[in-house]
Every structure is written in structure tokens, then in C-alpha cells.
Length: 457
Image 1 (tube, rainbow, N blue to C red):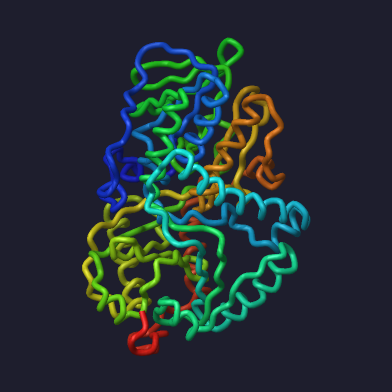
Image 2 (cartoon, rainbow, N blue to C red; image 1 turned 90 degrees about the vertical axis):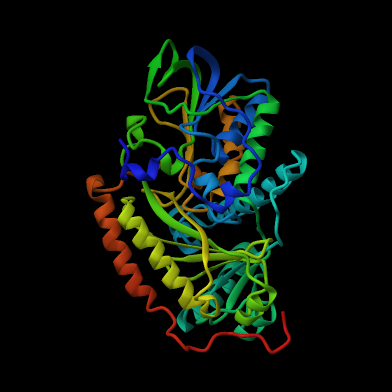
């Protein structure tokens, strides 16, 4: 059972900037006939391919089953932010629920995850258009600026971090200017990349290590069989001793039944403009390639791409029907024009959408499925899967190999079920309306923006 309408799972590739600018994918023919493998991985995204690569490097036979082709899902549709994240819980909530040491360990894991991707790019010689280090969080109103200052103090106390606070004038001097930005918090950890180039490079790396990747092989059933698991696809079947579920927001809600109601996929809309000239970038005051996002609960995320295009994304969709998606993209364009008024009339070149994944616990999970020997899951990246999913996949491979996985305790708790699961989407729509009211209005036309002094940028 899928939670959204069929357009969300259309096997056609989205008309994304990433798909249009990536090298050809590696050959991944479908599974045909009856096959056997020591380990089966469901899902050829960051987590699944990272696990497959690690398992194959350890000499384990591993077969990856992907519904379409590697990178077709969220791993090839996101904004390309290789950054810290993975949970919707802030530090205070993590400390309350798990304690300060657990929160620190999860924080270190996020930092390790960014380094892990950087190492992968180097070791596997993946050219993924890596951008400059660091990520900017922008306050969308004065109260949010005060909250960022508190956050900087709290993170220094809990994690020993020294994040950089920047006034609007200091942001403008860095080439980061938009309407209604009241200050910024710069984290030096992280970097932007081309997510599909990275994903396809990871797929090739897994194949070189010995993994088999079967595209166009959606798993329709998963059941215990002969001390292992039997997986069925449209053209074949696979018998495996152990199975990793790494479908994040794109898997069936009840495959396996244990997962039912533990996830809530959420829609994100993304678009890229045509290339902006140097004069156009200077007119807006945005000349930096630093990946950035704002402090709204229904956040916007955006960055200048190496080729001069500008990428803009936002959350808030609740339906995959064509009319609803068109309305979501129109809303994203309206928000873009309000934040970057100098570019209000700049043409959009491509736009697309995809599913991020929340869990009922608002934290990611990587571990064994309770009551199902040999079955594991790694999912729930909350819109920040580039780094977190990559490292979690490599670490869950340790557990599949019978080792003690180097994973933070926060990620080892099975996700809670959402209450009233049949109302997940209606309640999400209601929650979005409440969050939009809390976020407040967009900058008004003519509202002063944070422009740099003449000649800068």
C-alpha cells in the first residue's frame, strides 16, 4: 500500500536539473527467474548502496532490488545538501528524551557522516560538483534571529561548537542577501554536491566491489522462507538469508507489516532557474555558493549552483495529484519571488517534486526489525539523507555481518507508530496550516532587503 497518489511513484524520471546534467547511469537490468543471495537490499538510494558496497567489500554476496533505477527516488531528487541532520528533534528535545551524552553521540555521528561522504568521493573518484564547505541558517524574522543566538550558545555548551553568527550586513558582505533575512548562523560542517552524480558514482562503486544491482525490480512480497527470506518481483524471485529495507519514503507502507504507520512521506517541491548573469546575481546581492536554508518550520532551502543557476526548494505539499503539484510549484515560485525580489521574473528552467520521510519518533532508524530474524531497516532521514543515510548504510552493514555497529543509540530505537495512521495525511495538511501561521507572512513587496554596498560581489 502506498500513502500517496500514483503520480508520486511514476516510474518516469522527473524532469530535474540533476537528471538532465548527470552522466549515463550504470547498467542495472531487472531480476529475472529464481536467484539466491546472502543478503538482499531493497532500495538503491544512499543507504542501500552504501550498505551494498560495504557488504561486497567484505566478501558477502549482495543483491540490491530497486523499483525503478538507482537514484530515481529521493536520492536523485533532493537539493544536494551534504550536511548535518537526520532528525526533526532539536538538541533540547534529544536531551530530554535520551540524555545529553546520547545527544552528543548523535551530533558526532552527523559530523562523521559528512566526512564519510567526502572520503567516498575521493576514494571512488566520484566527480559530484562539490561546492564550498559550510551551511548557512538564515533567520526569517527578528524572533528567529534571537533564537539563533541562543542556539549558538547552547550548541557551544553541549557540543563545544563555535558557530559563527552573522548580522545582515555581514551576510551581505559574504554575498548572501535576500528580503527579510535578519541574521545568519554559519556551520562550517557540510558542503553542496550534485546528488545524482554522487548516487550514480556510489552505484558504480558498489558494482565494482561485487554487488549486483537489479533495476526495474519492485518488491511485491517479502516473507520468511527456509530460514531466510523470499522476495518476489514482477519477473523473478530472490532467496536471501538477510534483508535490509532501505526504501525511506518510497517503500510500501506495509512491506513488511511491521513498518505500517511508522513512516510519513512528505512532499518537497524543487526548481532551478535559468543561469543567472553576474549582473543579475549582483543586483540581488546573492553571489555565494554556500548552501542555505531559513528558520521557517516549513523551510525554504536554496543555493547558487556552479553553472549560475539558482536552486530553490520548499516543503508543504500534501497531495501528488497533478493539480495539487502544480499548485505547490506555483506557491514555491511565489515564495521565491518574495525572498529574492530581484529575480522575481527570472524564468524557471525545470521543476520537480519528491518524497522525504518522517518517522513516528521524528528520528532515523538503523537496526534489526523486532521479531523478524535476519531483517533490518535503515530509513527516516527527515530530509537530510545525503550524509546521514550514506554513513548509516555503511554502519548497518556491520550489523548484518554480525559485528557490533558503530551507530548512536538514538538511531537504534524502532520508530513509533503514528496515532490514527489513516489520518496521517489530513493531519499533516492541518499541521502545515498551523505551521504556516506560526512562520508568519512572507516579506512584503518593497520591504528592504539586505543588499551589499555597491561594488561588492
